[in-house]
Length: 252
Image (cartoon, rainbow, N blue to C red; front, side, top):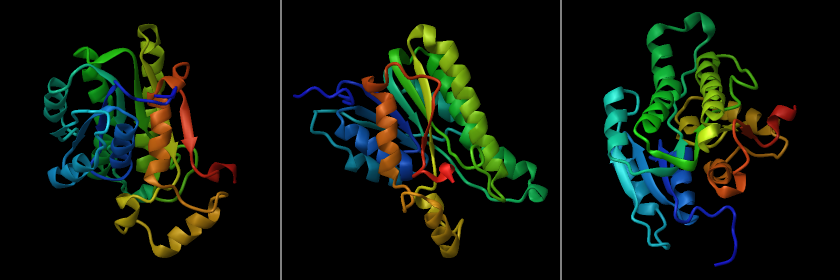
């Protein structure tokens, strides 16, 4: 086989949030690049669809694990089921749109648990149980939304993703001496079920497309390919980086 520094052949990669959107695309694209993929999500039916779509041309034996990563029992059960990993892609996320004056404890707690606290505790548990090999890479899916640009009603989401980026940088600094890397991808608007579930209107979608210099919204595969770069040996000297993948929108 020809030389390819982006290959994931021989790597075992955990992908969370793999039942849809960016997580599903990442799992599928990683399998095409040769990784043995361990996928997890809460919805068994949708996760099975992802599992059935994984590439097996390298002879991989992929695994799927149903787990709720918003609670510690789910995290512990997942980690115990895993082998030592060369890569982790953390994608679970939810959106809740509320103006600041309507923010409440229940909604804030939910979005923080799923978008920030869950990934933080999962990463901690992977370290404690020695599931991250020397040279491994952990990629956190964050966002430009609420972090690099602000929109009305997006404050809670921005808090959760900004906190995730802050954790990533601390993790990357602390783990560098162990040869373990941490980075985040920060997408612009990507056409996933989060966006198509009625959270924004058709008019808002059109306005968003017009704001992007490259003339379109993102596809899940656009983000998956950036994640593959950060998981691969091609990025072996990259850590603590917030990689923006946004069609140029923050240039405006």
